[in-house]
Figure 1 (cartoon, rainbow, N blue to C red):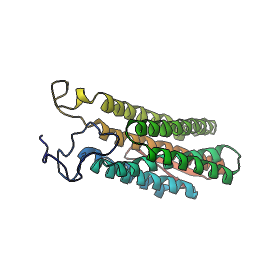
Figure 2 (figure 1 turned 180 degrees about the horizontal axis):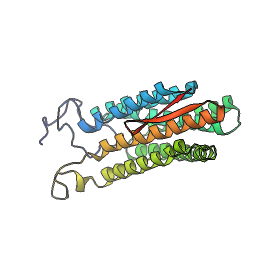
Figure 3 (figure 1 turned 135 degrees about the vertical axis):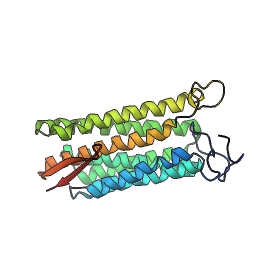
Length: 262
């Protein structure tokens, strides 16, 4: 489908990355139509996490709301491809993974919470300033290194929580770990393919082996959001275990985990 306008409403692209989706293909007001609307998955699932919180621990509500903010920022980023809107996507991602690390560390280790919160806040602000202060490839690499580094820490802590849940005969909750990891691996594969092999999968030009663009980055949004929900619910279940809160977990539509105290 040919673009509806030679230049979209938001003008030139100023973001450090322009994804594989054709810009302004469906409307002159949204640069990346599918990448924008697939971000709604994060908004919905983030709010679900915030509202289902069975622990009474406000950090989990804050984590859910931070995921919602990521979804809103992602929508704005992909709709405009402006650098300022890119920051409304990427900086909340850093904050949300920092909140997840705080919850997991303070649940699993007996440490001074106030001191750790201060150190983590300083680190997150430092990385946020560095991320926002650079542009182009340097900014893209710096953000990916920072976010993925914290994600690995959070993933390791989720694994520790999984082992403790298994030891407590809660394998049905512990299984959320591998469900989340599978979603993330599938999502990451789509993200890497979309980022590095665009010319071969965009459905345009002589190099493309596909007749149409499969919108892999949009599917990354959906699968990453689902994987995130699995891991957040795992953290909630582990927190309940450690704090002695009785809870039950069930699936909504056979896909979405839901946890509640009783």
